[in-house]
Length: 507
Image (cartoon, rainbow, N blue to C red):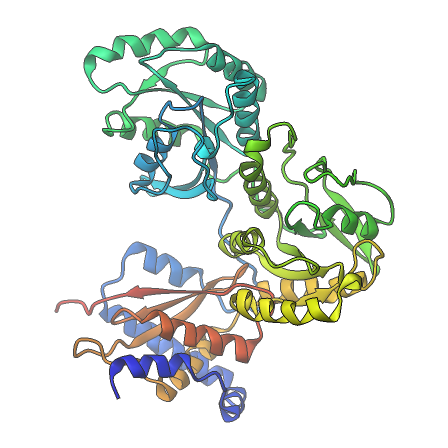
């Protein structure tokens, strides 16, 4: 059998050996902890960096300890069309992530990216994703910038030094001044020393010192980022993590799927404006709602005001609203209209939830309107399109009539309990030993990667790090993830399995 067949073999064996569960249950916990400790000591023979050591220290064994990474500070990039926002995003990221085209109006799904500078990580929000049309451009650009600023801890305001400050820029400046957020003025397209004098003329915008830069050539960007780090907080004030209090739920879905009806039914009163016209919801402030005697907090979407007349920005707004809600939430209910085909928009929303690491519940709405024909197609769609989130609890509801709304509570509780789950290091390493005996990793290039030690570095979502002697094939990591789910449940939460490949220290 070839190596290729071997690894597919791992992917194609879903059935779990029932005796494995019994063996794991029968393991003496003290003995497992001692074995894990000796494996941990064995890592001292390998080259570990400071981050490795920090991860190993972070992994405690208290099953009730809840740890998660702090919310990253958010930096928004705003400016009128064609000033080089996307080029600056790419320069900061050090890779071509954002679409850069000469014609304005290139829409993308992604509006935010994880960035890093001088060992500090932050979230970059790029507003170059849609550009308003010429009609009412001043107000449109200012409105678009306002949305991004709502979600940001600090703002990069980009001006094209060759054009100078325009009436549109003045509009944005007025909005930025009113926002009370720190603003860093970027004089872009300063490709050489001669243009620096032109950058100085931007002092008269009243936003402080203009920072000359060339996003295209990279000139001045390092200095700009050094300055950004002096302004950005260490932990986001906008997307800050809160501990305690009612659990925080985001209701997500495409327009008109019934999000407002669900909130109104749950709250038992008409709190949210509901209108047949897609996109008419004005975002509610956070709502404390009691369902089945338990209080939940339904989070708002960071006060974003959706301007219906800015139709061309609808996708951009939808992505930002979803993102903002997820930043504040612990669990997301993604609503799916069963009377319509599962759309790419819904799959994109689910991907955003997975990317954010939040717990997930799928609510299939308008179940009372489902006929037998549609039900057959729906089952096939769920099997094909939602296979990657087969672990998420599913609830069939009618938000309009309130039918089965109470079933959301156990689903939310299950997802959050999984999200908070921690596996003791001893048990985890005992499981890894069993799995590698059951299915050794295929030999690659004459070598067989070994897993030296595994540890859960955080909950919310459960995140595992495997120290290995070589790269583990993606299928092998999926095999480990699947076994973790089969044995420990993890229903309703994404689980992350990261690797750190380490070499033996030279003697």
